[in-house]
Length: 541
Image (cartoon, rainbow, N blue to C red; front, top):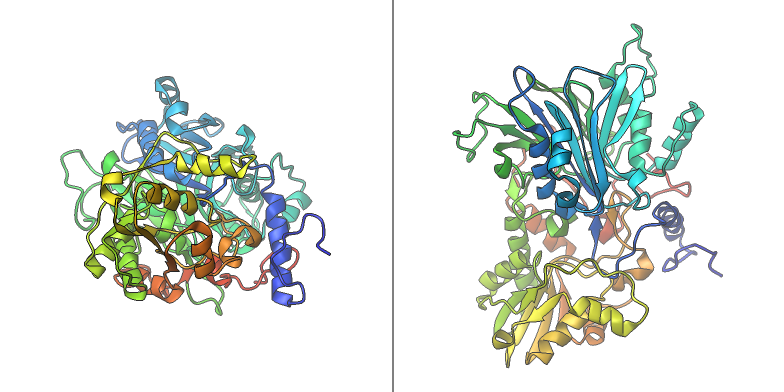
């Protein structure tokens, strides 16, 4: 008999399944209180930081730059946002604006005027480890004996329970269940070697935290006059650097280190750099701690992985779904990788048809790749209503289907009498694709063949992606042929895991030193970067 509150879909006679079930139970408990969605995946957040170079107060509009940077990261979280700035003079107080909702509704002219400063960090959030409430808005700010500290976090700590116990044992109180507050308080603890002169040794504190929590996080940490940018040793979550150049300087091409910077930015993705006058420099290396001051940037240290964990573990779903198409990871643009996924999908699962199309918008690049590889012309068949919010659980199946169908309209003139290949980036619960197929067939499509530009999702993620429990993932219930019958498709096929890896690495160019390329495929393969989780929700490192 299944225990109350415990997820099903696991074979409890199988030791590995039983361990995974235990961790999923903890994950469900951690994530209780969030608004559930009927379909799709959600990322937890995006982080951004900016600092002016030279004399302060800087001539750069730091608060506006951060706001525009967060707008570019809005796809990573739409529940809440916040910006914290410092004028560099007082260590006791920061300027703070945080709130629930979209960035454009939080940061009006009055809010931007309040955010004076030459340095600042920002955050846009979708909750994974705590409820969607204003108390959990980031960046988190704490006041220490040595001044204020602000932290913005992207990811989810896989060993948060043990770290929480350690922090509480030091007499530190926690007011939320957010991993980000936990990180902030953990950074206030003295490192094991102590701080002999009585002043905080922030690099030592950061290294101590990284030893306690190997993954998953990208962090921006702000003091009164500097920012630390940190990426976990596995490189699971993205983080990159940009250089703000004078307005008359070109931003294309390789970064020229001889060109003087007006400022520096750090961001979860590079997609917003051009709009703020910044040139992409490089990714923050796995395990790297970067210090950003008005004098420039420098690497403090690079924390390595355990000797038996040679490969990094960058989340492969950033390429598939989460990242904006114009972002750069590992030296390649996301759009190009998605197009390559479409090419590989056409090689693996060809089908005769009249047109190739996509479920907008993250399926578009893969559809173009499929079209070019197959020689079947591309045509749009769906138009998306951009003003429809997320579809929360509805009380009846009819309402659920209508809530999904209202997001799209069919271009009947393009589909009538046609055999259509429809490319989607992923299928999660399987709720969305059925109503879309019905919509196209009602518009006159003769056949609809579904091709998915990623492998079947079968396992939850504990590193910052809101992937449902195994029992909710449709790939654990139905094989492709069964799913095709259920949703009304004439055929349905997924890209293989080998094909996805091949597409992602086909043009990969990395500048990361001493790093063996690797990607986290846990949600697809069940192989987690830190090994099989144990029953107390910590990884067995």
